[in-house]
Length: 232
Ligand code: SAM
Image 1 (cartoon, rainbow, N blue to C red):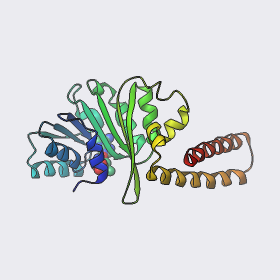
Image 2 (image 1 turned 180 degrees about the horizontal axis):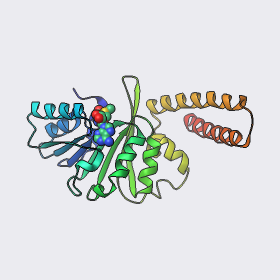
Image 3 (image 1 turned 135 degrees about the horizontal axis):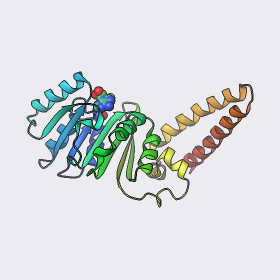
Image 4 (image 1 turned 30 degrees about the vertical axis):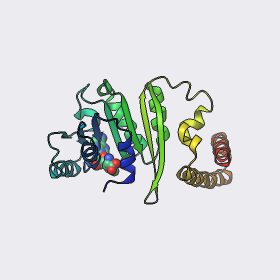
């Protein structure tokens, strides 16, 4: 049984897609996709030997070796430009996800959709998407096994309308997520605010200098902005 998190990621993959799942581990996601949709095909990329072997075994076990190609390598280097139209990267931090995209930018030619599932640091991904001409079209936040996950879906396009106002806040919280404000969203950001308040107290106890004062002000501003969203 696939985790709820990966089922939700899979929901954003269009029918008949050629997908690359990077950092695929057991290749559960591509296997699920290909079992659900007989017109889909996939590449499962893994940099580490253990997970690479797990992926190969799993693909063989479910009889999908003709439709899922398991490849070993770092990030997008396992791909040829134009080979896939969708890329999924799930279960890692936002920094690693953006590093993988950044290092493989030339492999993104022909890719029309990115489905990214950061465990932390979704803001880093939103900033990257903005910078490289990707338009965020949907987002999801969910809790599973007491962890909170975000899913970001992007296609190529101009996002100036999406971020016209409150840009910084939207990059941090997610423009779609902050509109919906579901329970997982509230839980995550209440927790973050509590954490920031603890840091703020530490700033207040620290020897005052310009740098500390600047950081303190920024953090306070951030707390006020996020608390306001939570109170809507
Ligand atoms: N995508 C699966 C999921 O969401 O359940 C697995 C997530 S697992 C926590 C992260 C996987 O990414 C590991 O199997 C790791 O070996 C792989 N990985 C990390 N960095 C990578 C990179 N630069 N290129 C390819 N795979 C990578």
